Length: 456
Image (tube, rainbow, N blue to C red; front, side):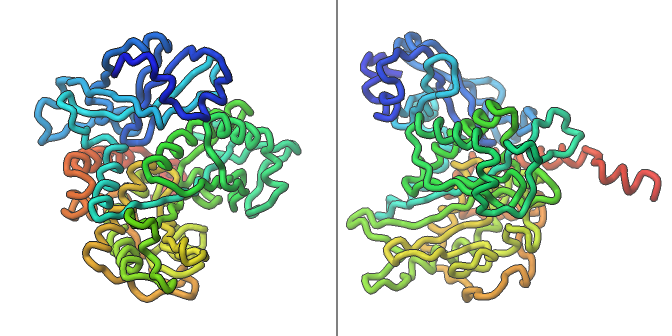
């Protein structure tokens, strides 16, 4: 890292507004690992300003969600713990408003010592896909929607997760979608989320009560994929901190409670022509273009092959249930929320495609990269979607991979996806997910004890 004493001048205006003349005490240097967890180093600001370089070991990318490490057969010198170089991206710097000290967090890019980007790093995977769009003169635009649950504190994993107690002293109940009263039940948490987001310079489009008990949805403004993935990365942390401040948990599990709907991260996607700024999904006479249908066709044909990224855990597949607010197939339709791929109502200039398959348990960098990769391949190969569905798509067959094992098989068998996302990343990701799936199969569940212990 440069010893440039003017690094403070590179920080976003929102941070300086929040700082309000105070001195920065600490700096957190962070990256996202494969799971999307924040990893890095914290240090006094004066040390950050003096540092010539900063490093993290390669092994940070080899961990499964349980903390175990995966062995890669074709990775030479995997365990030499060679250092990777961190470079701050000051455009991706925000406050840490819940900290007792005046603290800055900065997302870092990560490269090998020769300067080449680390292909395993999720942020670099997304940048790789975006760069492929730019080669065609295209710039993708995305807008994520974040669903999550507020719950009672759960410190015993053997006990079911329960909805939180609201300001009325009553426990939350389901089927309160869009209820303002339900949102107000958790007013102090929502207020802290707004305050933290404002301090970090993030603009929330809307906050609504979703269909589950204590389930909230936050919609973000559309923009650059890397910038929006950074925001989701930051939002997960700030939402958790807002919940903890109010004696509850925030969870981004895809299906935390059996009788409640799952949580998604719907991604709205469009593509802009870099030469004139126009939406390439829309013709001059306001009709869908062939590229629009190519993107749709790519989503429909290829999402099964990247589902292990959009639904990355064994729990993720519990969300895909008929008539339960999550898709079970990849039909598409205009203004049809039963389909896996939806074309929302919009002006022709804002024509976009919503991927409704993505779970909130995803790594945002990887999920956005994988979804955009499907659309790009579809446009390149001039794929065509099936006819639009105008009826209830839940009445049609379930055609998504039924579990993580099947999803991984499809992922491993698609060379075009592997090439676009990067072979090093895909090999690592597959190995990690296979190990997590195997670990889950070693666990004996309460269902097995209840129904099999004395009955078989």
